[in-house]
Each structure stands twice: as structure tokens, then as C-alpha cells.
Image (cartoon, rainbow, N blue to C red; front, side, top):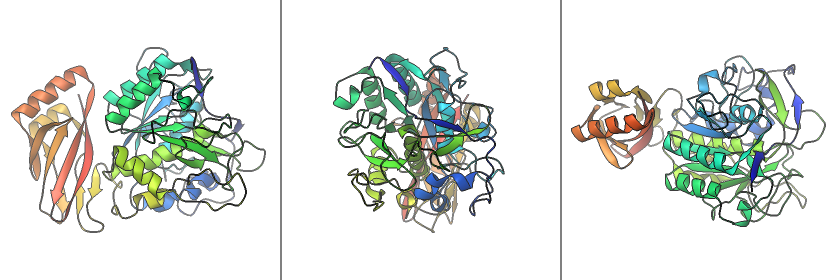
Length: 422
């Protein structure tokens, strides 16, 4: 698989699209056209969490960082095409994928998204023509892994689907490292209509996503069969109203695209919702699979042997109120509300620690960097001498590090993350 490409099909300009009425659950004027969010029950999931505190790395063509529906949702990324820290999208594909995951909600403009409280980490590995090398993609995956990604979205397809055949390659090795690090990896099944996932699903550890149209039937282009994990809205690639997936574009506007590229970020967004509730890595993968639902559409193309991702079912029973503010979380449903900062500067952390609020209290907690306990306490998690040394050394190597904070209270616990920056 010498060259990688984006995994979308067709584009229809939607910048001038005006809906007849706004969606009941949103004041985003184009929400009414986002049938995919309805299919996966995203609005219902948002009453539990919007994904605050989760970071999704979109390894793709970059992002339009100035897009009004994305500007507040982006954390620093990297450009492996130009070798700099400005992964500007000259193609549009990465911006489109990013908008499906985490476009701003209820801001009075544009579209909604699956996880509007999450952040996007743009990692550019494909050029303006939508092509790139295996080496750049592998490096991009590794960069996302070492810079705090909770979820990695791979809306990519190859000229030859060798990874789907199980042939070892450097991308698969990078994906394995990400999986081993507790990151949810979500990959497109491919648009060649082949009877197997075109990306290596690693025996089910990677979520390989096929596409359905708005009627719930298999999109004709979507690969299927062996290695497929589940399906999500990808569009039909046919003429007609709202046939494809509407999202952000790199000209500041919006477009419709069809492809397993568009199905994949629907699942990545659901993974972000789970991460925000403390369900991470393979636990999140298994919950997404266990809660996927059969659309029940008749016909030979309806059954992939896999269900459609269901955001509402995935977060059900995990608590109410998470994702409504930075770093807030919940424990047992409806009982204890836990909150703490989800982003801190290193000097503030070292001086003040992490202040934790539990309602009702009391609670205690620990913060870990990798496997090292760097802070612990009640009300305030104070950084230990060992923690100070560990964090200082880590921040010399990285611009940011992510701590896993476990807060315990009577009857349960929550596990969330804090991003520490210089």
C-alpha cells in the first residue's frame, strides 16, 4: 500500500444551503439536514455528555483552523507534509471529517456534530491532492499517540488494500502501538465494495466502519464482510436532497460528501463521548460494539453482519450531566457530580495542584502520568516530589502531557483526563 488517499466519494457544494426550519434540538441552521445525527441518536446522547475533555486526532489532510464552526474546538497538531505546526487543509477532506466529530453546537451558525464538546487534534499526513505515504501516516499516528489523543480517526484508503489482507506494514505497527497505549482507533472500511475491511481491524481491536445511506441500506461503494466492526451514516453518493453527509469545508462553508470517510467520524465522535465519561480504550470499543443496533431494513444489502453505531445506547447508564463544562464528570447515575479543570499550565499545577469538587462530597483522588502517581489528596490533589520531577522531565520532551485522574467517592469513582501545557 504505497500511497494513501482520503476515503470520500463525491462533493456537492452546500455553502448556500438554507433549511426550511431549524432542528428542534439545536439552533444551528443546517442541523435539519444532518440525518446522520438523527440516525445515531446523537441529540439524545448529548443530554448525558457532549464529549468535553476528550481529544480526537484526525489523521488526514489537515483542518481549516479559522472555520467558524471549528475554531474553538482545535488543539495544536502537526503537519507531516510541510513539516511544521500549521496543518492547514488544502483539500477539504480533513475539515469535513473534523466537523462531523466536533463542530460547535448551538452557536447559531452552520452544523451540529456527534461530540460538540470534544477537541480535534489535526494531524496532516495527506497533501492537497488527498494523497500521502505510509511513512507519513504511521508517523502521524505515533505523533497523535504521544501528544494526548484519546481517539484516532483514520478516514483513509489505500491504492492496494494490503492491510485489510493482514499483510504487516508500518501503519499497522503504529496502530498497534496506539491500541496498546489505550487509544480508541477508528478506521474506514474502504470505498471499493470489497468483502473485507480494507484497513487492518487487528482482530477486532480497531473499529472498522462501513457506510449506510439515510434509508439504512448499505451504501453501494462501502466495503463489508470480514473484519467489519459496525456501520454508520456515510451517504448514498446519489443525486437528491440530503443524500450525503453535510459538514464543514475548508473555505469556511459547508459541503456534502459520501464515503466510509464520513461514516468513520460518526463512530469516533461516539468514542469521544465515552472517553468523556471515563470509558476508554478497549472498554470503549467493546461498549460501542455491544450497543450498536440493527436498523432492521429489509433486503440483501441491509445486513452487514454488524449494527449501526448508537450514541444514545452507548452512553446510557453512565451518568447525566457530563460534558456540560470543562472537566466535569459524574459517578453513579444521578448521584455524585465531580468537577475539576480539564486543562492546566504546568506551573499552576505544580503550585496549586488539582482542585476537585464533589457534590455531594467528600471525595479523594489520584493523578497519574502513564503509570506514575504524580498527585493525590482530598479536595486538592497535591503534586508529590516524585510527581514534580516526572512532570518537569516529561514537559521538556513534549509541549503537553495528559494526566489520568481517578476520583473516588462513596459508591463509585470517575476517571477523567487533565491536559497539562507549558
